[in-house]
Length: 464
Image 1 (spheres, rainbow, N blue to C red):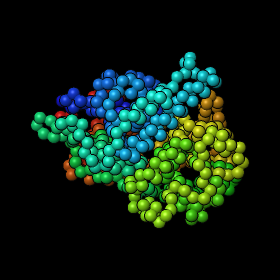
Image 2: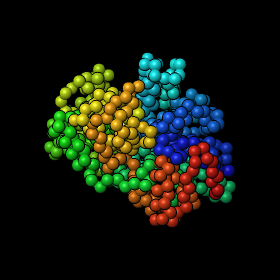
Image 3: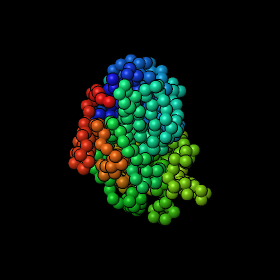
Image 4: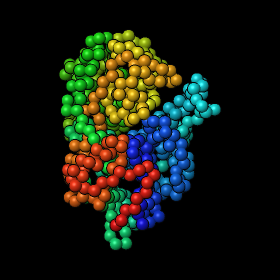
C-alpha cells in the first residue's frame, strides 16, 4: 500500500513536507519551516504526527529554509536516518540551518531582554547544537544518479533550475503488479535566466506533486535589470539609499550578477554596494565551488577570467559592527541583506533605520508570503512592527516581480507540456489558496488533466 500525506506546503507556500509511505517504509520529501502568519509559525512547534524515528529517509529538493529549516526539530524529536540532497544542496543546507538557529537564539534573547514576549522565558525553536546534529545526517548525491533506498523504492534528482542544487525528484516504486513513479517538482525555476540552467524536462509520471507559488500570475515582461537600474538611478538622484531584502541563496547572487552588468554598462551611478549578510557571502562562495551547475553564458564569463559576482565598489559585510556602521552613512548606497521576506536577520535593522526617510527605497525582489513584513510592505501598509517598535513607512516601496526564481503559471505549463501523457493525478501544493486554484484552472483548461488541491495533514492513497 502506498500513501502520501501533506504535512506542509498545502494551502500555503511554506513549511513544505510530504510523507510518502510505501509498504511500511516512510520517506519525508522536504522538511521546511512554516513562515508568515502567527498561526502558521506556531505549527513549527507541533510534534510530528508519528514518531520521528519511524521515518526512514528524508529527501530535500533544495536548501531554502521553507524546505529544509525544520530538520533540526525532526532530529531533536528522534529522527536518526539520512538526509538525501544534491551535492550543492548538501553544501548550502549547513549555512542555512546554522544561520536559522543563530537568528532564533538571538531573537529569543532579544525578546527576553526587551520583555516583549508572553513566554517566560522565550525559547528558540532549536539551537546551533541541534542544527549541527541535523547537518551530520546530510548525504550528497549527483544529478541523474539513481539512489536505491531498498528493493522497492529508489529516486533520481534532476535540475529544477530554481536555485543552486535545486532538484525535481522522481521516486520509483515497485508494487506487486507493476512499477509506479511519483514526481515532486520541488520549486521550479524559470527559463532563460542568469547563472543557472533551465529546468530539466520530465516526460512521464503516474502521480505528480507540483508547486504553485505563482500559479495564478505572470511575471513582468520588463527585463529585471532595467527595473533594478531605474530604481537605483532615481533613488540616488534624490539622495536616498536602496534597501533590498533578499534571500541569501539564489536571489543575492542574481542581484550581484545584474549589478555587475549594470556597472559595466555604466547604467547606474557609482555608489557603494554592500552585501550585508554573512550567509549570502558564504553562499556565494558555495556557488563558486559548484560552477559546473551554471548555464553556458555564465561558464563562458568564468572561462574569460571574470567573476559573475564581483565588481568595483562591492563590499562584503561580515561583522555586526560593520553592519551597524552602514546606518550612519549619509550618502546613497545599495544594501542587500537577508531575510528575503523581512522576517528576520540584519535587514530588519536597516529597515528600522531607513523606512522613515522618504528619500530611500525598499526594493522587493522575491515572493512575499502572506503575513510577513515583506508582504505588508508590498500591499502598502504605512507602519511595521520591528523588534517591538512601530516604525513608520515613508520610504518608497517598489517590487520587481521579474527577479523571482519561481516559474509563473505560463512557465509551469511549458514544463508540464513535456509530459507524453497526463499523470493519473496532479496534486497542487506550495501556494496560497488563490494561486493553487489558479494553477488548477489553467492545467484543466489548457491540458485537460485531473488536478487535486490537498488540505494540510490530508492523506491520499496512490493506486498502482
